[in-house]
Amino acid sequence: MAKNAINTAKDAKKTENNQVRTEKKEVKQDLKAQYKARFIAQLKNKLDNIPVEKLQMVIDNIKIKRAAIDANTQISATTKAKYLAQIDALLEILNEKVSASTDTLDINKLIDDATNTNSST
Image (cartoon, rainbow, N blue to C red):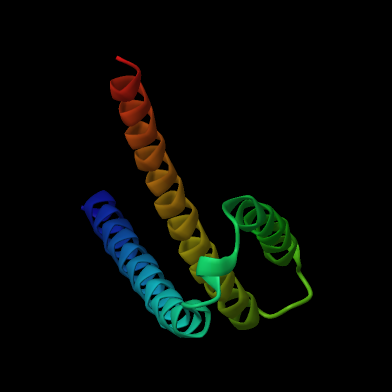
């Protein structure tokens, strides 16, 4: 009987911990979504003028900064979460832009290859 009570208590604690983790994830995702919307509004016209190569360099630098902030033990957990949400939102925007640009470049290359092949025959 005592074992069942202990197991029940452990299961309840596990369930509670899972709920807390889920809530924290949702808060992080909401915060990231808020920052992403703000960044998109601020950067929408500027990103089109930056070459993909430079965007990739910026992404690499931001990843380095993210690792430094994540490793920093001198800032509070709240501040760290805020900074990481901002960085993750910015990284997501930049990665989407690079992916979209790369896809466009691939499509243009395929079209150029197809037209060059057809004109030489």
